[in-house]
Image 1 (tube, rainbow, N blue to C red):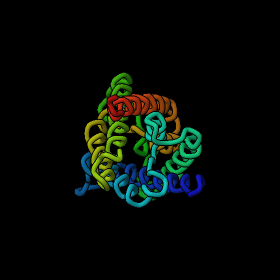
Image 2 (image 1 turned 180 degrees about the horizontal axis):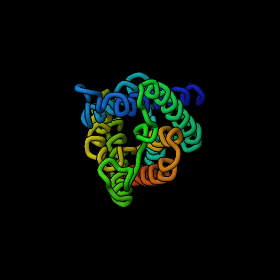
Image 3 (image 1 turned 90 degrees about the vertical axis):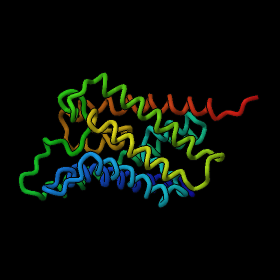
Image 4 (image 1 turned 180 degrees about the vertical axis):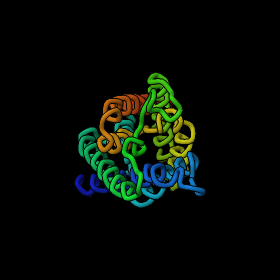
Length: 232
């Protein structure tokens, strides 16, 4: 399959992740009397990955995340020459999803973009008021574990056909842990879309949600490449 088609699949998949995950946070998390809360948002993010893994995993690998793509390159599972196309597609997918979510959400009287559109943040923009250092370490560590689990679950020695379930549940767990800290990124494309729509503080803090996940991806990729290598 051509790189263009695979990149398009990544755009569609990342769109679904951002619209589904961030949409659950913006539209449903605190809906009167029926809000889904942090648990529901965490499940929504996990389900977007789970459903897309079955839908496009056989087409593009279903990365949906620049950090995952970088981790797969470091782990020896993805060619570096195709990385730019995947990252551009993922960021575009996230931006389109955020723009559409803003359009839908703004149709409700009283909606205020200042509330963040599920943008990631630290300090006063952290849901729990956590510091920049706490956010950075959390994003780095969570992404490292996410990439390590992805590499392990998709290893040819792992149980066949179960990787989407393991990966989706991992993303759910990551959100359950870290929503209060940063609103959970572990995905620069997921962070970039809402940040560009919100502007201001969200763009100013966006650097952390690129740097920490990418560093975490390298850590996860290097770690699994060493763990998974056969002893000689």
